[in-house]
Amino acid sequence: MNETIIILFILIACVGILLYFVGWINTIFMALGKDNKLYAAVITIINPIAIFYCIQNWQDGKTQGKQMIIGLLIMSVTIIPAYVYYNNKSV
Image (cartoon, rainbow, N blue to C red; front, side, top):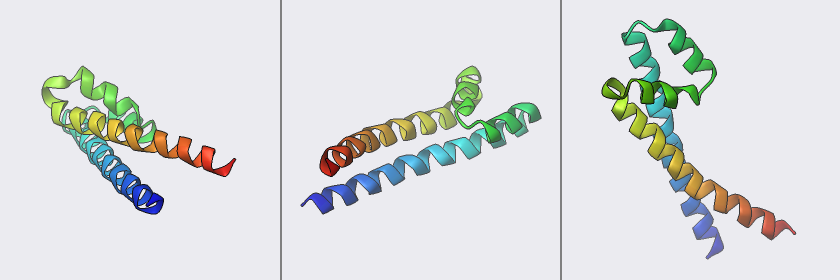
């Protein structure tokens, strides 16, 4: 039973990671499309800046912002309990 729950958590975390990654890539393309090459370079190097860029440009980047925020929430909801479970199990 524990293995099934762990696999389910991993799959849900993968969905969150995929959502975040797709939103991040779309944000880079949005920054390049708006001719903000400096922002695109910074977003590529420092990943979390993409969320702030989408919030600043919410009219153009609301889809990308929602993808990244939902992906981040899904990752948090699955990874934090998995980390706590793993630490309690190893003791």
